[in-house]
Length: 511
Image (cartoon, rainbow, N blue to C red; front, side, top):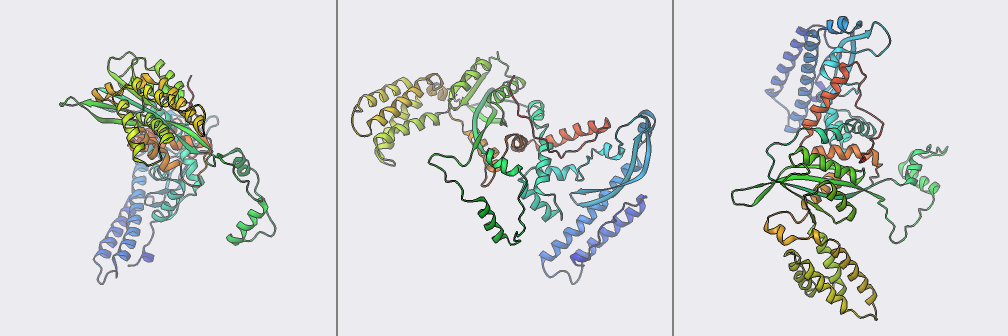
């Protein structure tokens, strides 16, 4: 048996279960016979390709059997007597695209007897099937990877796939309740003794106003348009004219920062040291930083670390003053810490003023000051920088820039002395760097939202960011189950439910 000889499942589900059972047994016998065929396929490649088609057709038949059996057991009296619906059509046909392929089945269609309102398919309500035409599992698969990759993989493994624009609309719809899940979803069990919160930002390339205007205007049509891609591109560039050259310092990325919050706990071990991270959760948003901090405050309370707790709470930040002030209001007893890497970068910035890049003298000079930094002797470090400043002449080539950089670095460190008690933090085995949130920024944002050619609109990137957080947190299956329950409740209320949506997500904002 070759691949083109595999017969597809019946286009219409038989009204009785027995014919379906016979088809399933027949298809299973065909698969066994094909595996034992002598002579068989010439290569394993040919065998596997045909076997996959056979298994998919068997899966479609089993899905039809399941749907038919569930429909036969369905009690319509709840709808017809208690809820005032009447049977409009006993065998309304529908084609559903599943993980095994297209499946056609029949189910009853009910309409309200009194008043207006949409009709319902009780079987679809009972199984949580929306009007998207694809099964929830397949929609979840498409939403977990990039739009173009999802469309290509769907074409490869399922035989057909929606366009990238449709997958984007699924993401918009599936990601709408994601914020609620991240805020009110199940809490991790067996948390540690110390709560650590790391906050940072990551820029995402967004579309400029000029790009948006070009996207939204009607596309120009030319009578002499050539169908050849090579000449069509030349004609478009000719109509558009030469691109305006960017000046020095202009950014082509047009980045908009997403705020990332990573929350995890550390557990005290028998050796007296803190081990972890435990129960790490990532949250990101393009909304205000206030909303991200408020989310962190709510989740800390839910995880057993309320504002007046005596447990240790540590927050590692990038040193932004307004963020520090906001955190001190919400986490009055928390230990606020400046990421030590930011302080180190300032030392290297100063060192390059006096020593060549990559020289041993530069490394030695910075290492000496880093030793003071790690011991928490920030005042002594500032005195050393003061000495360097006094040693810079008031006149001479480059001295003005040196003094300016030194004064800026000293002012930066002076205003953050309370955040750099690294000596005590190291003795207590606490965190001094934000490596966890840096990794989250790379996995959550960098590998999904920051690729060449991407240009996002913040409100349309927000659901993708939230879904990506759920994926990285390992909560995808729990989220799909939770969101399926929400949609089923809407279906039971007689509402029209469709995951696919064109409405962008509203960005959260702090009250």
